[in-house]
Length: 103
Length: 220
Image (cartoon, rainbow over all chains, first blue to last red; front, side, top):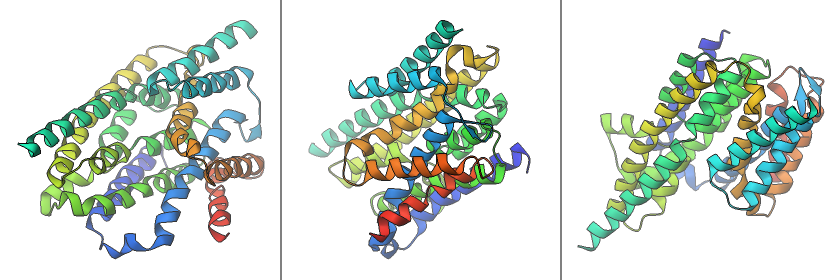
């Protein structure tokens, strides 16, 4: 699968998923298992994505102090209720600074 | 008279959310280029996929050198929540035919939040259209700017841009973690599963395996 194919599949699939909801019969939503699954799945996937992107590299666990410091800065910014872009900027700035300091 | 007030409040909500969140297209553009996508690839994703978490998921997995099929599947699993938003919004929007095909592209986290927050169905429709339009335009323009800016930059790691993707996920996840209950434990469990699985599976698969944590929570 080339990258362009993956992009095409994601674009078509994401649109189809949105349309399916608008066009589906009402009673599907009333099923509590469906609701609960839909609420829980994004939480698990997002947490797993954060962990993998922060602490692994080339299929192995790896601790990058600069990235970890950036994540820490993001948590502090979130606790201070900073806007989305400020959170991202703080994390990137701290990561870059730690890289400079550690060489 | 009162309806006019509701609708202008909906326009205000929609523009506020659309413009503010739309700016984070900068982060997506930067993350996409850092992961190895081209500027056109980043822009096509924002134009056609138009759902931030899935876009970040695909580019993140590509950047990690992951299997593309697993990367696409992860992005689609995240896009599955838009289906549930669509179910919620169908009654309020009441769109049919070509207008439904157009409205479908706008069914995402932010439009749903604004639409469901409005007091009347008319205000809800106004909120949906305003949020969708302002967010779509801003998100796509800033994706282009972020992607183009980063691609002319050289090594994005120097500016710490490699941390932008995961931190964006954290910011999206944050309100749900703060809500407490079983969600923080679920998130921690999913993270541990993905990390433990990483040495043994091709990239992209550990993230999908983390969905096992959902089944455990639901079985309780």
